[in-house]
Image (cartoon, rainbow, N blue to C red; front, side, top):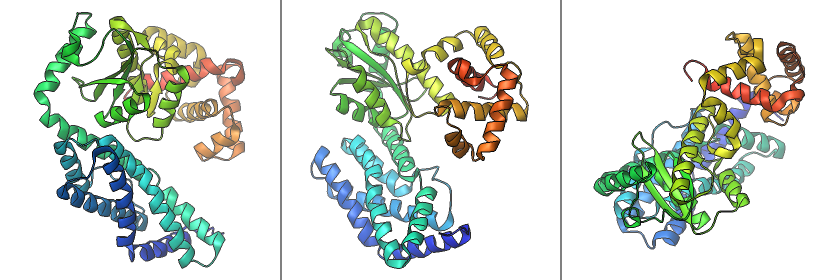
Amino acid sequence: MLDDRGAVWALVAEVVDALAAEVDVLVASIEDRVLARLQATNGEPAPALHEALRRAVSAAVRDALARLRSQAELPQELLPDLGELAGLCASSGCEVAGLADVWLVSQEVFWDRFQVVAEQTLADTALCWDVIKAARLRLSGHAARLSGLFLRACERESARGNGADEDSRLQAVLRALDGQWVDPGELGYDLAGHHIAVVAEASPLLDTVARRTKRQLLRVQAPDGGIWGWLGGQTRIPEGDLDALIASHRPSDVRVAFGEPAEGIAGFRISHQQALEASAVAVATNQRAVRFADFRLLIAVLRDSDLAKEFIERELGELARPSERMRELRETLRAYLEHSQSVSATAALRRRDRKTIERQLRSAEKLIHHRVSDRSDEVLIALRVSEILRPGA
């Protein structure tokens, strides 16, 4: 085991150099995985698309290796070669949701090869594991970030070619949300069935959702950005299936919020309003996949600002004050409540030792005048509401 971080990163760089020496082999392996997914959903790609795919995979792999060498942050913009691929996918009309997912799948190929090269380069097995763990930690979220950026680029390119149809469909959706009758032919969607409304950051994500649920999909570009969607069917989606669907999207880098299952044109409107409110909570709390039902009480409190402020004052008291010390205590208490009241999990998340966490929890309990466990649900909601309503949130 190595305690010296500098020594660990020197060894990471050594493994990266060895992997870079055979980067073409790694790129070819990942390209095969991506190409297989593309062929399964769209058939044999055109030569130009195939060549763009090869360049995009190479760029993604080289970017990952460069970030391991430099310990740089995750990319904020899409790599040019991936942007070119997104444009070609959109213009050719190919199904991009599966292709976006494969960036996440392909990281398995990357890390499998990284481990092989690390074992060949480093003789000590324990040392090898330290190096792999450090590299994985440094590159955590890289594939998800590229996937999210790629999805958004595809959406932008698709929107350019679908402007007129998109606008007429949006106007029909707005009339339906206003309670007016809309011919199903205008939407290509049955308003009389069962619905689940979705608000997402990128359209291709909804393709994945519709495919997994085997539901009819209606989607439009929202007036203020993002995507509005509805999943329709003749029967109500089972609760367990919906929860599993939401859980499957939590590791994604693309935010998505779901309303509750509802029926008919009234349900079409109600589920959409729920999805919008859940989306606002997701943004405020930095969560990736949320469901209205999981935040029903929180959203109800937020609908009335005066009620929300009174609720915070009653549940948190002095703990709601805007000082740095109170902020530190609130963050610790929230982490504790969101992680099954586990001191160990809170200490790991907050990067503090157990004694510090226990001391902070005792201080918080003195400020709220009762044990946290006595009103844990109410305190957690108050902490979340407080964070959402703070200036600048």
